[in-house]
Length: 410
Image 1 (tube, rainbow, N blue to C red):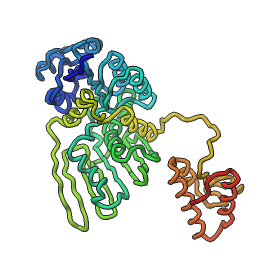
Image 2 (cartoon, one colour):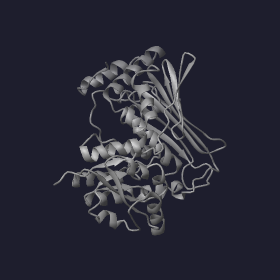
Image 3 (cartoon, helix red, strand yellow):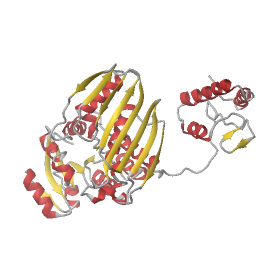
């Protein structure tokens, strides 16, 4: 088979996101050509093609998928069709550039993963902030310790209740998977996974306070990324607009807006340094350059399906819609739970034997890494020593560990 020398694109869904952000990027990047655009409204597809100098247009999904002149598909439709079109494109032998979020939920992500494994095709998820210069610089602040050790990342987004998108699907959970939080903050969640990988734990609270739309208008969440705490507070029925992400370090802070043109402000010892890295006119373009290199040169995937699904899984947990696993006896970990049947005198609120609250018990269950579980047990024993009571618990815990042939406290 002759190696591809050019990515020849067909767009499914040439809507607003393709007008400036992404469509021109597919045309401007070297070794990349936009051949056809599709939209259900054929007249709008033809108008798009005329305005952007695209050779062909259609109102049929089938045409680009069957066209041998096209070797890559950009799926820019609403999220409820992402999984279907991505799977169809992969099975048609096309590489796929898939708009975010990758799918409505983790179950749909599984369908995409299966199609990639079945076809051996390539797929990139359009979390383009991974390649924008100011976001790379923001990541560098963390990686280099410029403001010290990161203690907390604070995410805030408030929007006025009357600031409603004309694209009604963005507030229809059956189409977009949620409301403004899913549409926008999926980018932030993905950026966090780009910097730190998968979180050790995450939990959230969602409410529809205004009842002005079907989707949520208040979302708060907390997460732990390898010891870095993250808090998010997003309200889409507020009185005023506000949006920023703040890195709180041991030596200073850094802040930047994620959804508006924004400088980075670094504050250390009372001195502010402003970093100005304007976004390019077509914000997808740096990312598309990496996508093209991946498709043609086997360069690293800028955001694989495996990486892109993590933010969707996080949203499932925040929205409390993650599949509930069947109850089964867990395997013994190296560090058993502090609540290890040592104390038989339980009462509402806390266990008399170890004074561990329900919140602490829940927190321990969510810790996946061994070092965090061991540190938690050590912290709990230190807590009891300070309290000066319940002194029977520590030796009982060690005895239980020995009986189960598990690791005792560090």
